[in-house]
Amino acid sequence: MTTRDMVYIDLDGVLARWQLHEVSRQVGRKITEDDWSREHGWDIVSVIQELGGPDYRERPMDFWNSVTEESWASTPRTNDFGAILSGAVKLVGQDSIRICTAPPPDHNPAAYSGKAKWIKNCLPTWLHRSVVFTEHKSDLAAPNRLLIDDADHNDTAWRDAGGPCMLIPRPWNRNDGIPMDAYLMVSFSYMGYKWRKETNSNPQSHETSRPS
Image 1 (cartoon, rainbow, N blue to C red):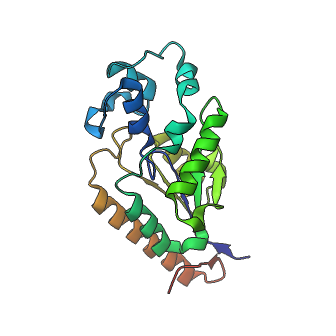
Image 2 (image 1 turned 90 degrees about the horizontal axis):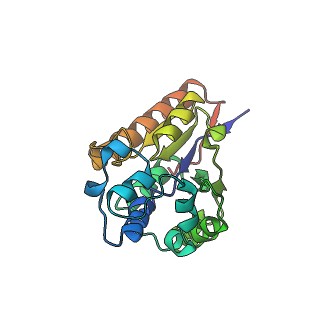
C-alpha cells in the first residue's frame, strides 16, 4: 500500500491575518503583533478587553456571535502567505496540499460563508476545492502528513497523533520570537530531507507528487 506525502495548512493566523484583523475591528483601531499581550496566549477575548474593546470574558460566545461574515471575508493575507504556500508546493506539489481550518466554537454560518469568500478571493484557484473544515484536525495526522498551524493545542494534538507540525511563530504561541524566514527555511528543508530519507529506505511506502 502506498501513501502520499501531504501538507495541511491552517487559514486563520497562518495564511489569513484574522486574529489581528478582528481585534482591530473590536477595539476600533489598528492592532499589530506588538500589541498582543503574550500572557494571554490565544485568548482573544482577554486581548480585546485589555486593549479597550468590549468585555466578553463572562460570555465568550457573545464574542463569536459578534464576528461578521465580512470580518472573515475581508481579512488581509499574512506577510508570510507567499513563503508558506511556495514552501509547501516545493515540498509536495499542488495536488498534495489541503487547507485545514476549524469552524468557530458557535458554528456561526457567517464563518463558513466568510471563509469561503476569503478562499475564493485570496487563494489560488487550485486550492479552492481542497478545503477541510474540522475542529478535530488531529484525526488527519499521520507520519507523512505535515500540518502548518499557529495554535499550540493543534500542534500538540497533531504530534501526539503521530504527525509532524510546523508551528508558525505568532505572539499567541510558544514559537513567538523565532525569526520567520529562518524558521520556514529550516522546517521545510528538514521535512524534505526526512521524507526523502524515508522514501529511499522504503520506496513502497511513499508516493509523492513533488515537482521534479
